[in-house]
Length: 46
Image (cartoon, rainbow, N blue to C red; front, side):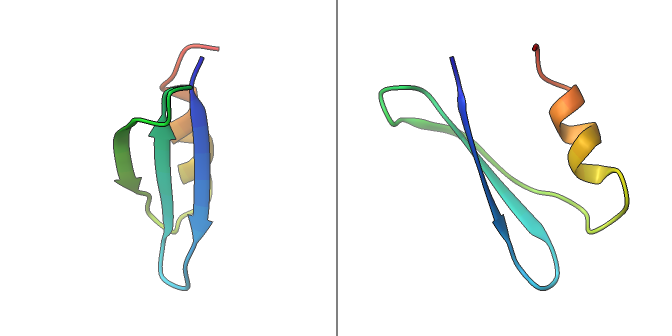
């Protein structure tokens, strides 16, 4: 299981992915464009 946290800033969204232990294993800035968050989420297994 993974936890995904989103922070929305004025110029871009920021995403942190962590394990249940709290260890952050990926942090990503996402473009402020239509469909960018959906594209990011679709890159992970459901």
